[in-house]
Image 1 (spheres, rainbow, N blue to C red):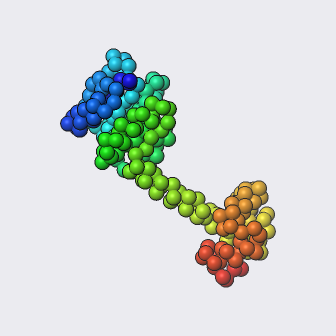
Image 2: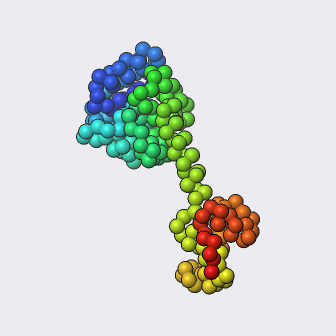
Image 3: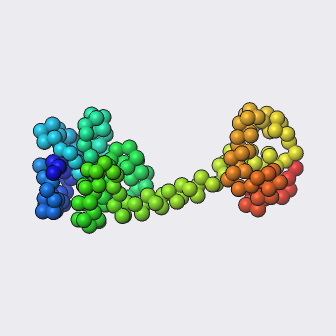
Length: 212
């Protein structure tokens, strides 16, 4: 059994969550608060094991509450129940502040499951949130294989007759830094030698055919 506090300015929604938890588990929701400031002030009184909070609330939003709990080093599992679907916000929350994220469109079973999972010491993402983050990671992986503006600049010079020393002087970088760029470029282009680098860079349009 765990003591639970809830922060959500939509009190009807919070009451429904409380009813579902207490009807389907041995956990107790001690109190519902309308903002993060009030909930944080109630932690000492109720000694909760879990805090369930919305993100967007007046007078102390969910981010404020999560940060205050983390800064205080209190042993509390934080579950966010939110409609927020921005990739950056969700990624930041699960990586730095919370134990679980549940979308407000999720079923009651996911809410109950999130409590059991975080109490076991694991992190929980509902199916909706997992899909959003999986999409982000797929794009991150694709972005990781795309040459940066600086790498394209280096590549174009590597495909000329200039020596490494000449290129380094032109770019105001050391030869070692240049060789690091070269290694990264060849890895991203999936080639093993300079000839392959030149051919693949032309094929992908990074370098024009009229090399000087």
